[in-house]
Amino acid sequence: MAEILFVSEVSRVGGGARSSDNFDLDRAPSNAKNFRFVVESSLQPEEIPNIRFDIVDDISSASDKVLYSGVSNGYVGSVKRDRGVYIAYKSGATKPFKVKIYATV
Image (cartoon, rainbow, N blue to C red; front, side, top):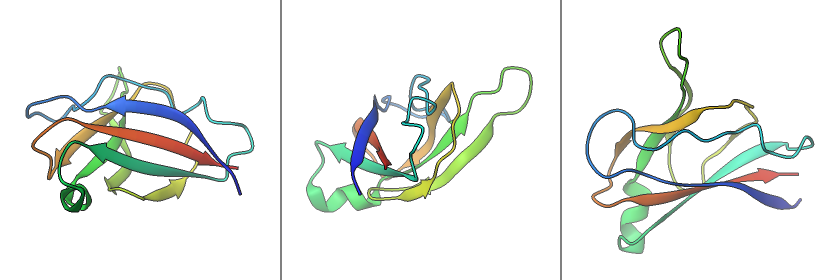
């Protein structure tokens, strides 16, 4: 199986529920089987497993919906094609981190 990078998003500094700008999950290849989340950070490598967050769908006329909960480095989830999602409810990070999302095809 091959993996194709289709999202590379950097978290925001500071507290609050929203931790990134919106990005799109619907850019994945049509034959994607799963999404794999990779966390990169300037933290020590042993601290990266402590970073956890959710991926949330930004719904303008209703409450936002959590699509992936408790995501950490190496997390694999089913394909959910949504536009306007964001990183939220992060924990374990003292500095910004990058989330790369790969589609397994």
